[in-house]
Image (cartoon, rainbow, N blue to C red):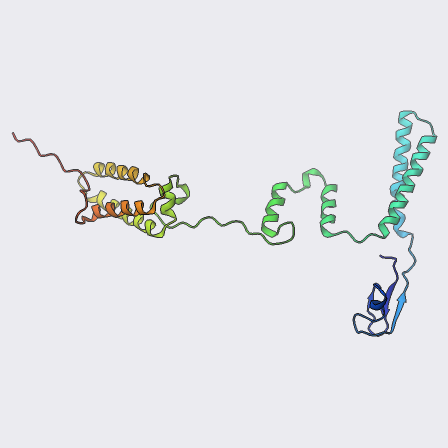
Length: 246
C-alpha cells in the first residue's frame, strides 16, 4: 500500500493521487470542488514478521558455519547484524514498491518449484505460439501451401514437375484423368507390361519439364490424346513386328 496522501471527493467518494495544483482542485469523477486530503494510515509492523524470520534463519546459518570453520565469536555477530540490517532495509524498500505483475509471479513460482515439475522449453514455446507472443498478440502457425487432388501423394512430391502439378488445378485435373485412362487401358490391352514400360518412359520425359507449366500441359495433352486415339497423336504402343512367313 502506498504511503502518499490522496485526495477524496466528499460528493462521490472518488479517491485519486494529486498530480499538480490545477488537477487536484476538482474531482475527476464528478468535477466537484468539495475534496479533502486523506493521509495514509500508519504502517503496521505485521509485514516485518517474515523478514525477521528470514533474518533469524540467516543468523543461525552463519553461526553454524562459523562454528564449523573455527572462527571467532565476533565474526558471526557482525555478519548476523549486517544480515538483519539488510533484511530490514529490504522490508522498507518493498513497502513502497508496486505489486508484481502476473508474469513476475509465474517466473518466481517456476524458479522455486522442483526441476522435475518445471515446464519444458518446448511446452512453453508451443503455448506461446498458440496463445500469444511476448506482447500478448495472438500468433497463428503458418498454413501449408494448398494442393489439389492428383493420382499421387502431393505430400511425398520430390520432383519439381510433381510440385508444380500439385499446385495447379488444371494440371491436377489432367493428371487424374490420365490415371483413369491408364487404369482402364491396363484392363483391356493385350500387353499390359508394354503399356507399363511406355508409361514409365513418359513419366521420365515429364520430369524434364521441371516446373514449366506450358511444357507440362503439352505433355499431358499429348498423352491423353494417345489414350483417346485423337487424330495426329503418336501411337500409344509401338506397332508389333510383322510375323515371318514360312
